[in-house]
Amino acid sequence: MQRVTSGLIYLDASATSPPSPEVLQMMCAAHLEGWGNPSSLHLPGLKAAELLERSRQVIASSFNATMNEIILCSGGTESIQLALLGTAALFPPSESQLVISAVEHPAVTAAAKQLSKQGWTIKVWPVNRQGQIRLEYTDELLGYPTRLVSIVWGQSEVGTLQPVRQIGQICHERGILFHTDAVQVVGHEIIEWSKLPIDLLSFASHKFQGPRGIGGLLHRSVIPCQSQMNGGGQEHGFRSGTEPVPLVVGLATALELVTNRLLSTNKGNPFQLWRDKLLNELLSIPGIELTGHPSLRLPYHISIICRTKHNKSLLGRALVKTLDNQGLAISSGTACSNRENYGSYVLKAMGYSEDEALTGLRLTLGPWHDFDTLHKIPSLLRFYTD
Image (cartoon, rainbow, N blue to C red; front, side):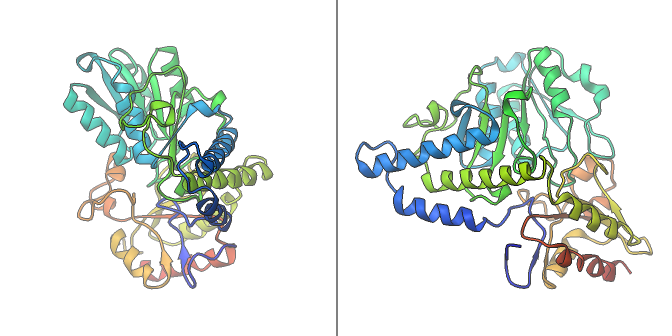
């Protein structure tokens, strides 16, 4: 077990994860050896360029992709913006429609709002009580003038997995570009990019124990995409800016570690068993109810709403602060959204009331845990629901 902070039980992996010791070690070496500008022709630049290309090879191999299909950038938000705004630039706005789900990350909805201002039509795909898109809307939404669809693969707040392979296949058959926000999935499932019916896939290093400030966009090389950051023409012209070699090394190291871990367990997530045991103990407490899909969900993810045994709602944000004082770090929703005075937009889209939408909690696991530590959590929550 990796120690995060002494005395702290950290269960907020969907917000960010502590970088692994191996990642920090490799990044430290890269800072010492690869500090040069990889575009320079002298020895420090050549050393940096070599480290950069070796790391690209590791990243490509982890995804079963080619190196020219990977665009490195600052993280999930930039990747999503590049995917949606960059490809949308190919189409006449007055004749184009973007479809997103009702439970997307704020980075997706922000890009949609920007396209709306440019003249695009935006349609929102409704979800059911478990957070999955309602497939009865498929024909209505995936027809003319839809040019682009963006569906989150694994929802960060409630953990529900969407049928992205099914939707991607339908989009391909109908000539529609398909993007997925896979920020919560990469690192927890083997991604066979060459076999996926997906055109654009966003990921972020810090969700799987890599460094913050680096992520990427998997992008089919046959699809044009307009750069959103111009300058020196790095990243095949898609994203200018001097490449942060130590961060790229950290990303490659983290990807290699999680890929090896998944392959060692026959492509299954080794933390799902711990998650299931903890979830079963939590659901035995009166007043705690699972949100999201019971089985089609991220393998490290628990999301619940909390009431007392007398059916009085417990405010999620208040409970998070109280439990933090007792050494338990959890979340009440998407960490990338500052919505302090409002209930969860995700839970409300799923049909929960305004009152229920204020009571959500999220617990997300990682390799720094052991089950003996996790076993302490139900008693902490039981104290507040009694």
